[in-house]
Image (cartoon, rainbow, N blue to C red; front, side, top):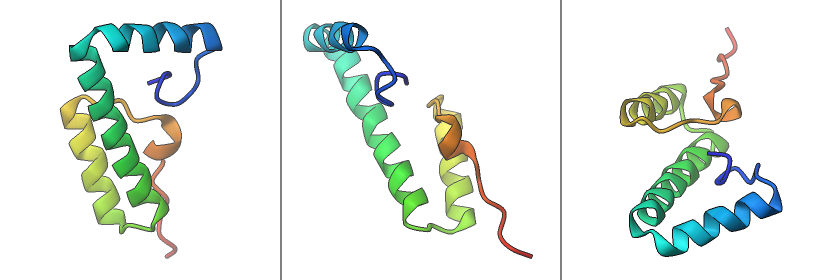
Amino acid sequence: SPYLDSELDTASTLAVRQHLAGCPDCAEASRAAAGWQRRLEAALSHGASMTANLALLRLFEEMGVEIPYPQRVVRQLPA
């Protein structure tokens, strides 16, 4: 999400934070999405296998989690 990816301007970020502070459902959804994003970033940055990367991406897609473009790029292994 633009919020989790720090793509919002300051005013929008503050508005989202204010909403999350007063909306337990959205706050929980935001925490869950942030957790999944951290796990995916860790897997990709630590050289997880291509199979593991693809499995994670498929899982997130099935869950309806939006994956930012850079993390969606799966590098081809050298031939």
